[in-house]
Length: 209
Image (cartoon, rainbow, N blue to C red; front, side, top):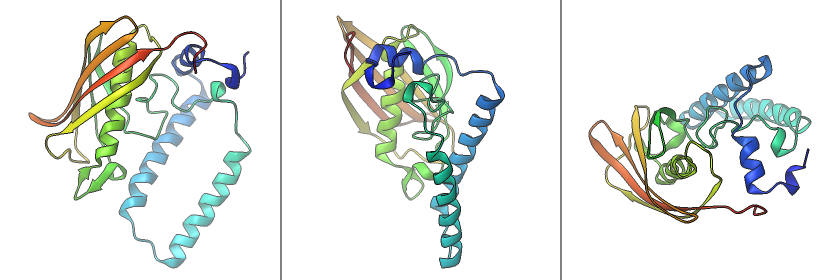
């Protein structure tokens, strides 16, 4: 097996997008990641006193110390395995539930929690762009999983995207020109357009990171 340091983007994509294993370890890992996201939401909503904050810090330090002894190379990790960037095995952005996916269109839904909030129960604009990048990158890759890198992503914010409610995401492949893949997307709350984006992704060549 090639080490992760020598893997190019195509090899790493093949490893990261392989199906999530159906093992007791994998099941436990997904349950752990669900707990991590619940912790993130609870963390930003809480104001612990000094003693409580110190207790939480001590427990986190203990868990961090344990995790550092379990580090493995990137290609061996369960983190973000599957549909890269949108799976429940990661904690960077709210996981997307894919409702439809073909060569032309991706439709999904998600529910951002308190951790995704910027202010006043509205989702942070940076999180919105992260979600767009993850979903639109998946659309650019297509069902065949062509490895791509983001060349640009332009986000326009139209209305507040609330947290703790179901939001819909739609992405479309607009044009393919050689290695270039142009994608558009929208995030909606019901019939309300919250944000839209246009992006260019470029298929990577063999040997590129």
